[in-house]
Length: 77
Image (tube, rainbow, N blue to C red; front, top):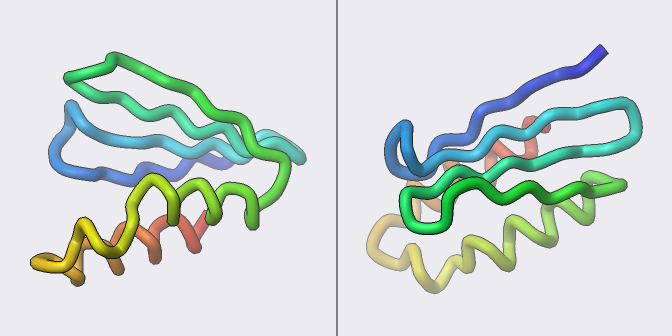
């Protein structure tokens, strides 16, 4: 059974979906700049490491609540 999580960044065009497919975690990032990118992870710690590198806390200094919301959404996976 596949479990799907949606993590919105800004709007419906700039979003992420995360699917847990057995032992694989597939992240699809949809962007109006780059189109769609897919990443496959073998563990949740690898996903969290990617998320922390993709969304560094320093770039959310003005809006730390948004950064916390995004990280909490990744922790729910």
